[in-house]
Image (cartoon, helix red, strand yellow):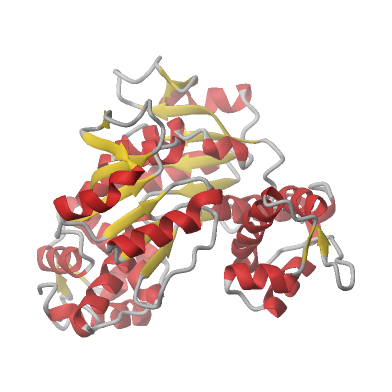
Length: 217
Length: 217
């Protein structure tokens, strides 16, 4: 299945978030020497209802065989393609601070289809440098670089004070999706995709649950 | 409000995830010189219903004044404390690969209450080294180090093949909360907290939405 074919499907977010779980599970089963896998088997491994798994997989263009289930190699290939991990999606990163620098160094993102091709900052000590082979330009050069590189994703790792301003500039410059790592809730026009990954919000949930468990002993 | 006081409250996860948005917004308003802030004002800035904001803030032990709203400094202090950002939560990190190494380098987590005090791996080239001042030990030394350090959070950044195995060892060793960065759905006993931060799942959602928008033009 190509990008072209999945164009009409807006898969519900919870399903999209579960599909990578199935993918990693099936990859593991493949390593263990399995050739076929059923929803029931994935269910046992992931603690997710088999009916839910079958429903999630129904968005993906693959059909299992009665009794034996899905062919492992095919399921992996179809899932990776469906999730966009086999395409190269080029991105700019904005804000080479601690987290931004860390993301530039994380080569894992490459294997899941995201290629950060350049970064922007205003710190004179960073401009002209490169991290992990990724060049760092002055933020003022963003528009110019948009013409040079074929990019439609922006990774946002700037301080909260400028999160909205940089987002506005990105959108003006032609960025179509913002991966927001700041704890700031950015506003964008309706046709722009935003994905929020707030590590701090996840920490807050973890701390609260830890406290709750500790006290309810 | 201390950890002790919030012990009985299990705040719904969606509320916990929104509270850091309000916090960063209020911090920004403070920088702009504001002394008071109302739910309506936060609502305008974040595009979240004022009634929802008031409800979320009702979990936090703070009350606004009619007409003027919440006192900015107090709201920031109470939110940071409530979310656990002012406490030091000590953590071990498991798996010093690309993402693990990146997280060790991200000093931002410190400002939100997470202090990674040691890391574990089996790579002989890493053991005995330190990243950002954080020592890296052999995974076999985990139990011994649990006695040495006062830790109850484990950050999981290992390859998926060993994600479950390392999780089991963590829990056996006394870890109470696992921050899971792998795309693998780990299983834990009921009393153990798990917070999943799958960058790859977020990428999948972003890619799908991008494709959908592109095709629906």
